[in-house]
Length: 119
Image (cartoon, rainbow, N blue to C red):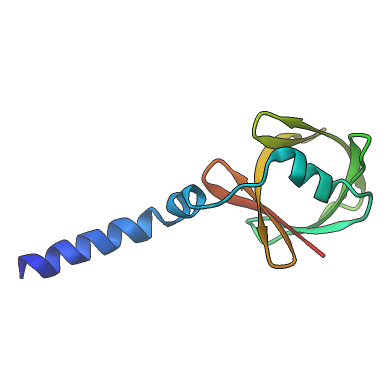
């Protein structure tokens, strides 16, 4: 009986810690490599954690745009900073680390999955 209780507690702990374990086990791309992939001037479909889809275009010169659920396009700038790629716009700054996934790149905000870029 004690073994079953321990097993149940261990399983619950693993499930609760899932996102952080996933992030720790990721092989993140160097930020320069992620930026080179993303900043090709072509639009990416970016799926947000809340299910909203954005069209993100980043250019090599550090500029770009985001089109999304709002009826207008936001101008953004981006830069490599530390171990992430930071996208800055009127709505704030978001710095993400990236790993490769089928069809694109998965962005991570700390240990939580964030924008998933695909084509």
